[in-house]
Length: 484
Image 1 (spheres, one colour):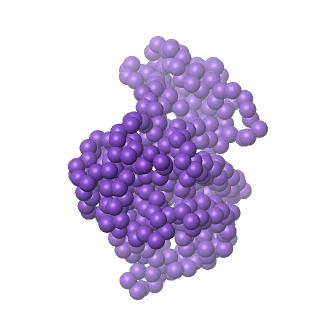
Image 2 (cartoon, one colour):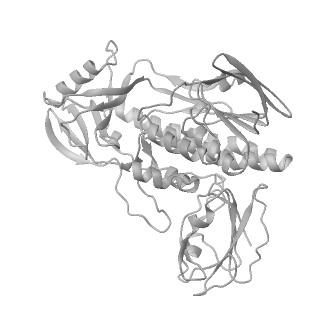
Image 3 (tube, one colour):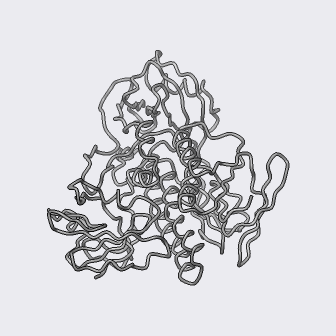
């Protein structure tokens, strides 16, 4: 079975991209060489911007229902409780930011939700299917797949490598994975039960002589499991027995009995960024393009947003090939590589603080990714500008019912906001994807098709707009045009 786009890798990045393409009516196949789906917590922290993406994808309700808010951390030194702190301050929702707080959901559960959503579009992950080789030309990509010892060569318009840090696609392209790996640091991460501990809070156990050299146990959704993280001595084995010894010594307690270590991994600081995210008709996304320290919970979230940025651009290129679409595809690397570089810097800074024992290492303010945007670096003007995240805000429809801007944005289309009664609703160039027109009026009531009232000027203020303004919101929720 051929497809317009082949996605290699069925983690959160690949699944998000496959959903976005499928809902756009683009033929997509998603393959993964693993025989079984991942079953651990790994990237369990979902940032607020990712929640906004998931709302647009139609999976937010399931994510919120199965997950839970980030819990406070109870710090214990020498077996004595000393303080409780949050990694970031709890924030109340606002009209512009409806999901201001991180959410905790085991990565395996996030992936299961995304697979279920993808199946609603008639697409299923092809497990146990390895991408063996590929060759690209000006007209498309020939991809050889292997499943159960049987090879198949398929033709597609584009190939996306979302196949992790050891990416077969990246290596085949010969793209340098620039960065460093520090073999002197080993961190043990995984999932474990500790039934005696209160599951409504997280724990940090350490010695007062080295307060940052301890073990963290953060509760996971589901009621029993904790995700643990601790430094691992060079000669230590990544076993339940070793972890039990660490917890007993650092907590000063012998009643914390660990069990059911269902997933674990030894992580070394491997901080890398692909030299290029695009090679002709082949793209890299997620960990195939950038790998992050776990500090800050940025990796999964950055990959999801890679996919969200790329999906609509691939649709535009498939619907309307030509120089404009090629420029749009080029913008994927320009926009996302710059973001990945900044986020790698943030994650690395938090890692350095952790290694040095800086008390601020637990601070996760500034990691929510709501401030990520694609504004031209030379544009320092105040207010909303091209490249900025488009905020949410309430409007009133013709029946006086509240409608959120995010409700109007939801779907695979771009949106043109026209402010005032005399503003044209003619299309604004949106990259050959569907564009919907929304007229925003100050009147208390509206009656026309696509008209909404902003009687208190909330939307106008959020968008720094006056009558006559026209603003294009891209399909990925960023401002693409501001004018009259």
